[in-house]
Image 1 (spheres, helix red, strand yellow):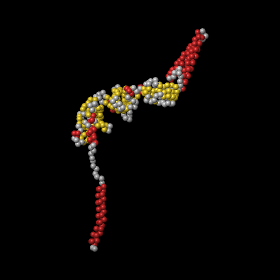
Image 2 (tube, one colour):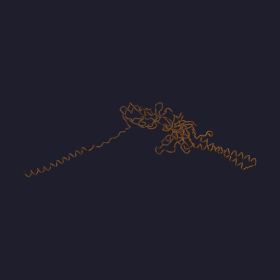
Image 3 (cartoon, one colour):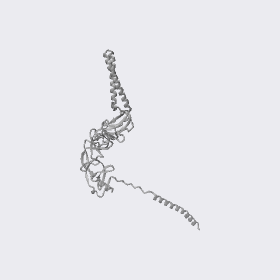
Image 4 (cartoon, helix red, strand yellow):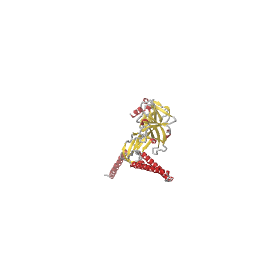
Length: 381
């Protein structure tokens, strides 16, 4: 083999590994390009409140009419006893309860016996009364004797006056001890160690702090019972600060009950709390309500509606145009072409002609879909 042939052979042998390496590099680059993620695409999100239908003519629209209405505000309230008509039952004696004749929630009459208390105070008071009567009898005889002696010149005027003063003081002591027995509820002619605690007014027992065989501490302890006259009650409402302009002292409010939806009571706003709740930014509004038949029960939830004085311009639409969804009220308005837009509104009261007020969200003259529920069902399908 010539020298030229050997040179070419050696060069070819050396280029073979280099070619294989270059080939391997090319395959790696291709693998990396295959594993790379596709380029990101930017998508524009559509308005979820806008819907499109194929046949918009199936959903007729109507113009919202104009109505002049006084602004109203409806809030939830809780029935409470009238504090001025709530009276505690007081036991003036200290002792042990031997009998209870009334329970929490009972309706009682003035003078009715509620409980009986066995007390050592009665024995002490009756003992004081008997001593006072004996002293009065003794001082009376001494005064009569002193008067006879004075008439005969046996004693001086000063001695007579001393005897007269002792008799008058004894009478005062007798009257005082007798009044003490009367306050404790004891008959002086029929003394007993058991005292009857009676109802001071007629009403309903709204609180009970005593049980049989329990002890009462007189004026220093808790009251055994609390009686409330529920012929008039309070409705306490929480009104947000931005709605307080619709509430004024002296104005009336409509009270509606969940238990009796056909009953509408009228109350008078007697107080607006001067302090706001810092957590929820509300003020307490107190409404005094007459309670015939005691339909309003303590703790019951009611709806109070306050009406403003100045009338404002609001929209009126068919009641079927309002859709109640997710605790909110909505209407559908035309958005051009085959599209409708769902708009949140604040609905007002409903009239007998099946129209309903819209306090905000839609202006008079604006078109709305007359059957929002049917459009919503079509969209969901």
